[in-house]
Image (cartoon, rainbow, N blue to C red; front, side):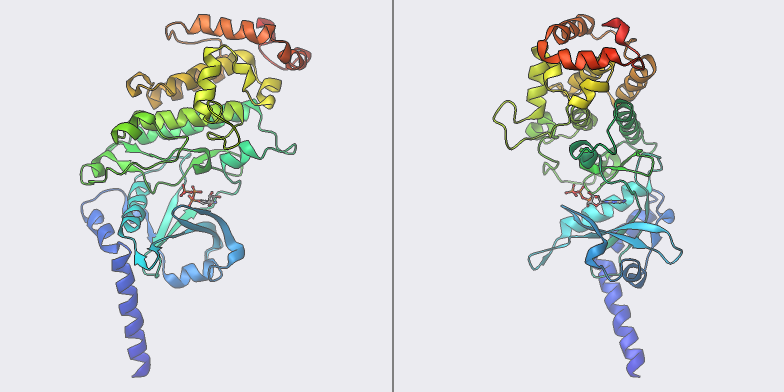
Length: 383
Ligand SMILES: Nc1ncnc2c1ncn2[C@@H]1O[C@H](COP(=O)(O)OP(=O)(O)OP(=O)(O)O)[C@@H](O)[C@H]1O
């Protein structure tokens, strides 16, 4: 009798957690056929405890605004990343977080792209709901850019390839079959790197499908300072071009190796976007480039990429290119070495001006020597 009663109690508790963790909300979306939720496996709380060795501290991979991520091993031996959402704020259970959690499940269940992190399943019957992702072993793009070491230099080719991969993922999301999906929090720490250092866009907690958006009344401005579209900040209206802006910030992070917000500097250097735009205006792009980029990157490609970033960062969203255009231009830059560019007003004369000031600036003579010494660099002859 005691055993049966205990089992019943446990079952009731699991049902209670399932409901509280948004299980019903998910079922609702399931029945309305949104996404491909059958592909999402429902894990038991026991499986999760075993996989993380009871949420052992030394299994923690990282902590974000939404919770803690653990490295885990499933019974079949596969390695996964398990995100334990932060649901309890003080003593209160946060309904908004449940919504974000279910939102991420629904959004990710609709996505199948090699540059987007895969969601394998979730666990709703545990006290705190959990998300189970494929494990991405090489950390974040943020760490790769900002903690560079000699063992793994971030080459120019890697920077361009990673930019193309993120752009392709965003283009895919924006043109998703059922309805466009906006990521809404693109930043280098949300780009994970796999075993071959390929980019995987992650963290879809604040993402929105345009179809879902119609049923959501949230007008709260969300995102990360330094990456956030100023137009969205002012109007609370998120558009596909707001993702383009944040992508532009990641592009200049790749070009300059600098943080979007630098606490040590004073304005205008403090905001990387203002510093970058100011440098472009003064034709002194070379002043803010990552020394590694100056050393090994072909000038023409660097400049064309910088001009593309500048268009992504236009204050007027309508004047920014779409992600489709950005992805196509990046492929073109890579394929042609920046020699073939589309006509965007005065860009050709801008390129000439930047090259001229780069060439005549004494502080760049070092890098120039290094560049001209290398026979492998494709565009030396043009300078
Ligand atoms: N699939 C994964 N594979 C490997 N590590 C991961 C995976 N997902 C997340 N991580 C690690 O966990 C950390 C926290 O991830 P999470 O997405 O919760 O937060 P964040 O992006 O750092 O912050 P925020 O949620 O505030 O934007 C990441 O920085 C990364 O190091």
